[in-house]
Amino acid sequence: GQRPDLVISVRNSGAKVGSYVIFSGTVGAAVEAAFLGVPSIAVSLHMGGGAPHWRRAAEIARHAIDRVRQHEIDAHSVININVPRTHSADAPMPEIRVVQMNTAAGIDNYEKRVSPSGQAYYWPNGDGMKFLHTKEGTDVEALMERFITVTPLQYDLTDYHRIVEWRKRLA
Image 1 (tube, one colour):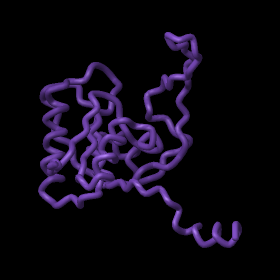
Image 2 (cartoon, helix red, strand yellow):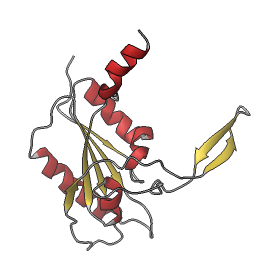
Image 3 (cartoon, helix red, strand yellow):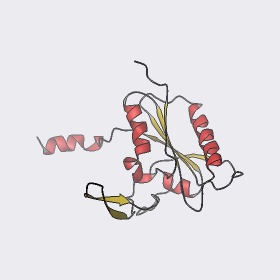
Image 4 (tube, helix red, strand yellow):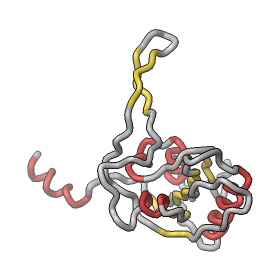
């Protein structure tokens, strides 16, 4: 009958930025907690350019989480944190940028696979960082510039600007 004070959803590798946030299980778990009234933080690590230094990446993630937790997180809020690529134990502590989500479509490729039951399915095989364009001041741009990104998210995807319009159309 008790709720946690905070949920931290962590994915061991792969940035969760731009439109890929929508498909992320890491962010999805944080959204589910927020939907239930528990503030949440999703944390991901940008991969690429060599093997990650996991311990240093964890230290950077902890620094970002601690900075976020210095402030109250509303019960139905999700904070999405992405840690830049980290390849050495002495990597400097990156600055934090609070940014919006890049909303351009992703352009990853998909690989056709076959499930054990014989059904075909398609698996994304890109790195999750390729988009039709990258808007200035977004999570994608900041992460590529090696900043820690912090993006407050909401789970209500309703397009409130078009509610009245659609009500009139379908009356």
